[in-house]
Image 1 (spheres, helix red, strand yellow):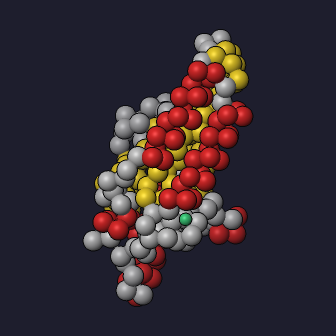
Image 2 (cartoon, helix red, strand yellow):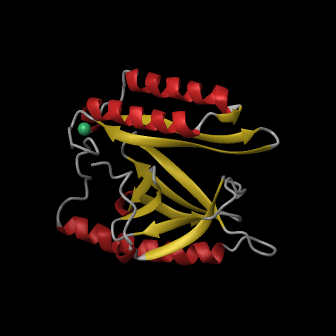
Length: 219
Ligand SMILES: [Zn+2]
């Protein structure tokens, strides 16, 4: 199981929800569209490539222009931070973010108590997302979608997905992601050049010998 990439919670599992804009540390928007953050009883769903388990949250804070979630990423042993903002008339509406954070904080308290009672505050041992094989590694595969001619009229998205997979499921996933890029990534310029690049890059990622193996991480 990969605690950092869990399925989008169904509507009845959503405890609270906020629609904010992804931002950098200075509160500048890095995305032109609002993104829903979904709070379930055990995690925050950010997007298809990231969920944050409530017990891994270290701080819910804010700067002058953004709200942030700081959490421990046990897959690579780092502390990560994601920032959000919500544009207002004169200044960002951080009150909206604070409201969502209050709900998260409440739910996190309940969750930590629950895990303490079960004596399970240490996370479930990570394994392949699909078959739970314990030799799983972390892979980052990128999907490119590109249509149009830059810089005139084009739309593109390059979505990195971070997966925790065993060897054979990693090969399958690399194939799937590359099929998507092959179908949707090369329509126009520079997509026609970039698509093959990302296909190759995903294959290199698949062959890369991962220094960080889950077995080593499991202390
Ligand atoms: Zn597997």
